[in-house]
Image 1 (cartoon, rainbow, N blue to C red):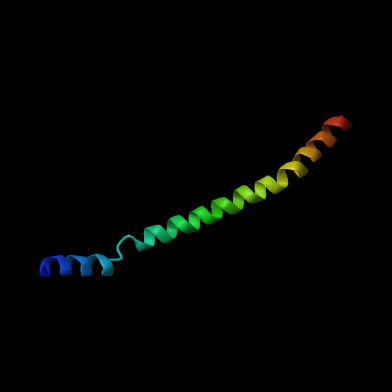
Image 2: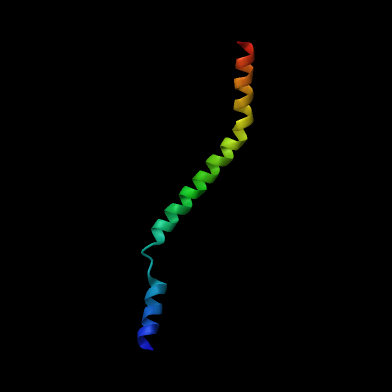
Length: 56
């Protein structure tokens, strides 16, 4: 019983993988922002290329 309680205490206080999870969350947030920005700029870039193509 004591070994089980000690194991649970060790698992709750162990934070070895915490940094990796934080970096993964930051990377996911940056990727989400990039995808959103690209989606917003898609029509503008397409329109500019169409204007250039029509003027040629």
